[in-house]
Each structure stands twice: as C-alpha cells, then as structure tokens.
Image (cartoon, rainbow, N blue to C red; front, top):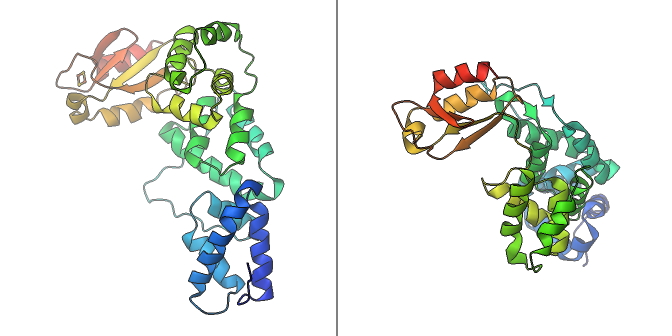
Length: 300
Ligand code: FES
C-alpha cells in the first residue's frame, strides 16, 4: 500500500508500530491502521505528530500502551481521585513470581509500558485490602486482555506446573468425550475433587477439549461456583441479597476485606436465607449479623 502523502519520518514511525503488532495480525491490521492515520490527517500530509495523536487519542488499551512504549512516548499520569487510597500491595503465595513470569513472555522493549499497566489492573482488582493472590493475578490479566499471541502464551505459562497431584484429573476427563460443551461440567467435577480449579488443571482441560486456554479461564472466572484458589480454613460469606444490600452489605464487605487479609476466604453471595434488618453474614456454617461475625472472625 503506497504511503505517498506520508513524510519519511512518519513512515519510519509507522514501521516501528508494525514491529510490535503480532505477526499473524499484521496483514489485517496494517490497512486498518493506515486508513485510521489518514483519516486523522484529514487530507493533510501524514506526519509523526498525526500518528502519535492517533495512538494517544484513538487506540484502545492495552494496544495503546504497547505502541506508546514502542515509540518511546510517555504515558499520561492518571490523576488519582482526591479520596482514592492507593493501597500497599501485599503479595501472597507466588503472586509476585507470576508477574515476573508474565513479563518474561512480553518482549523486552515493551515491558516498561506493560508492567505498570498490569500492576494498575492488579491494584484495582485487589481493592482496599491490597492483598494479591495467584488467582487475583490471573483475573487481572484476564481483565487487561493483552493482544494475541501474548495472551495465549501468558495463559500457558500460568497454567504450567503447580506441583499439584493431578492424577485424579485423568480419571475425571476419562468420564467425558472431549466435547467443548462439556467444559462447565468438567470444571464442576474438578472443583468438587480439589475444592478449587487449579491453574494446571485449567491448562490441561483446555488442551483436552482443544479450546484456547484464554476461553477456559474466562469460563472459570465467570461462574461464582468456581474458585481459582483453594479455600482457607474459614469461609466468610457476606450476603448481597436485596434485603442485605439495602442494609449496606457493600460497606461491610469492604470493611471485612481490610480485616487481616488472607486469613480467611471472603465471598459475596446471594441471599443466605436469614434475612433481617441488618446486613447478614455466614461464617463457616453459621449465620448472624455483622457484630456477631466480627466477633467470630476475631477468634480465628
Ligand atoms: S438477603 Fe441477605 S440473608 Fe437474605
């Protein structure tokens, strides 16, 4: 495609952009990007300035950050909300190691732009408690949704070797025929067997059903019935049914998130069947109000 109305510097800038577009997508993306740039120039000669404005103003994330990193453009620093607290992150399990493994997949020249972005997604996902678990890193990368082929490579790395005994998984898979529509039922069986969906199991199931690991992860994180991390000894469920929601269950959930993070599994669930005039909580197998729950939790 001729870039007749483009100056030399703009052509070189565009070539740099194409270097970071994954190869399988280049044929489809090149004409699309050229047309976006020329529309942006609105009939004037295309300069580097036009391309940079397009990248900053019109490209979606995470492509925008990746391309800005490749062009050496500095990101605009987001202005924190006046009352927004930036929590200190507490890394649990091997969550910090997972971030490093993800970065190993990203080409070196893009890491400077991608890592802060990922940490921002993790921080948002962690909420006020700032506690980061392996499952939370998996969820954050899903939300960030880096372009292919990086996403698939990252999912493979995350799914690899958890050190868990997966021999029971073969027994579970032997009961199925390998049809893609069996995914949810297989996940239910794994959850029943292991108490959660181990990352390595998700990888193995996606291979068995020949579906992308990203799809399997998306399903695993979409259903409340599935958990990506093993439950702790104590499980605290904050009811978010209508009656409890009207009694500010969201506030209670946020308070509990800050209570000794990581000491118990905290979940938000639908009506737990003991509606009252307060926000209700189930601690293990018992149900009570927030004062009762705080007292119970303090004795864990
Ligand atoms: S709505 Fe919360 S217990 Fe019923």
